[in-house]
Length: 355
Length: 266
Image (cartoon, rainbow over all chains, first blue to last red; front, side, top):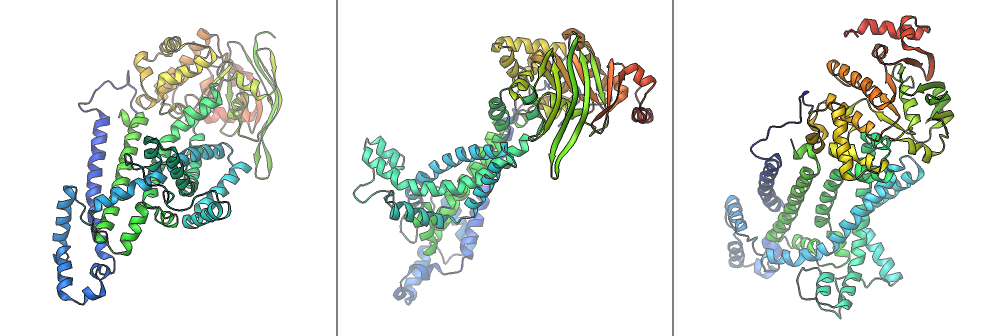
């Protein structure tokens, strides 16, 4: 790390800018990971106990060997596993995720139908939790060891250890049943029909269509799942931000910034937060990815037709192409977010950008 | 006495501990005159750095302070945080032991040399940058223009300490506290930093409080030296006299230790 005493900062210019080399390496790793996750996903789905034939055919059809054979041939189940996998990969490269055994529709179409619903609650939730997490985590770190800090720690631990589905039920009971503030489950009230699809996010599409009543109804429906998701992820982020900033607070350069006589606001936001931000964004990215994958129970409680709900129904029906599709989507999200975070690291940290 | 810049009288500091306050400084008194380099010597834990931190109000939360502070002719109330903080950077500045840790790794050198001058001296961006270039020249850093666009990891320890000194001097302080500024550096680089501090003192009419565990370093640098042990000043005398005929057994012990480990004649 430390360079020798030289006359000037390094003047040598490598042929490829370091940031490009850095990104190329990350990209190659991402492609490899994606490939690996198809294999693992494929094998895991095979390993699930249960017979897709039994799960999808009626008792009557199961008694008929011809029907079973037809089903197996239709889905390629009579081929050896490696052939099945290669076929799957071959289709995947062409953007074909297969056909759902349960809905009979292409898995890609099913996914595209359900993803916007999940994004509709996950996007506001991650934005809110990052803002709250940084705010509360910073507040606690600056009051390290004092009563306010203890309160934040206990509060976030409580948030972490509360099961999300229970929190969902509680929220639904309180705001829908007792207070009557929430319109209940689903994305829209029965009297409304979905706005013309542009982004797939109902409140946004409704606004684009100029229908304020519809937008308001969609927002009211999304409010409770967003609240629950926000509470759960904020708890994680608060703890992370707090410990990341506590570590930075101990650094000499923070003391030095105070000693220079900078206003404390400058020290907090320019020096402290700047140093912790990359780590915090990493955590926020991973939290967002796990949010997309982990909304199963919350979506079930709120009858929210998102990815979680789709994963749940596919799993119950042992719908292998659909399960694999969801798995791949989640894996790709993780990998993409990691790639974005790596890019952010490269931009934010001169030690990576320049060396 | 009109050439007195800093006077510390009967300073006592205690930090919160698990079983009540733990005293770290006891009845510490010292005076720094304008343009004078005063040395503070002692082992780690003797209260040297605590004295520096008290002057800049950088003590941990819950610290208890008593005693009198006088800076530039004005009585200072250590409980008046606003008045204490007003001194930071502009009245009293500090250089830290490890320059690789004391500069923000993600902010450019230019940024770190100008952010406080714009606050304290009300300089515009262009003026602050011109002043930063001038300062880097004064601390003998080659190619200042380029250095401003660079980041700390691109420099060596000795270069970083020069940059840290430039940053400390940027807001034109009257007192510079140098807390073991050469300890983390190579022996060959140390001498350069010491010479630099001495020449800056006369250029900027600066007073320096030089903290070190190495009495020998003070020989050619400080006119007056205070020896700290366990949070007290055990001996305070002109440096030459103190080195020639140390009065306190602890000072003699420090000197003897130095004679055993010394490799560089000064």
